Length: 247
Image (cartoon, rainbow, N blue to C red; front, top):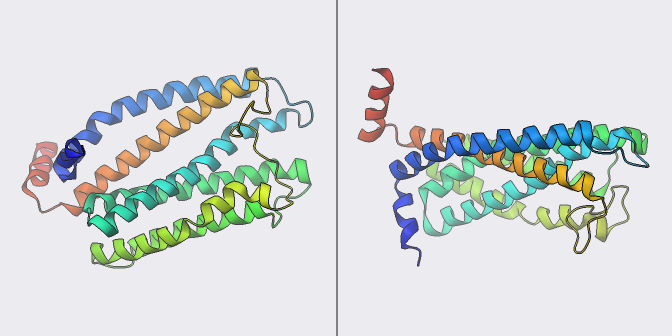
């Protein structure tokens, strides 16, 4: 059943796959983000309570959602690396961590900018905000562990263990607004049934979310490709690539 995946355990095959994916990911991210952001910032109606300040929603919510999605993907890769000793899984986890940290930081910064006019303060130790901040610290811890040891296998194991332990924070972020009485608003788009927003606001969000998702995939592929090259620098096929690039 999984035999079609076996060739991609080969670093050279995975490297060339990422090269084939990059143009498509670049094109789709550019198209969806261009349409989504222009639609959201210029043509979507203002919120009846928050006015135009709600437009930060189109960046904040995709960033927050992707910060959690990247972490879950990183945890799956870390689990695969620890259990099945898949070196490329460890490389993919290392590639994801800085991207996840960046999007978590974007979520926190845009959340603070949105919270100032709504709550009257840049920051409050709300359950959702605090758990998202913890997520940023987890990402930074994983990045630090990946770079703390010269032995990549040891570094991957240490980072993988921290990643798996930190997974418990994801449902806390997701359900914090339901489990505790917080200032942060509840789910607007992802709740079951009809979303709590009109379609003329929802559609630009969908385009933005898809666009940011393609952008994340693009950046992770670029980083994953670099990880493959760095970890296989003595292999003949990598040396051949360097020769072709320099010729």
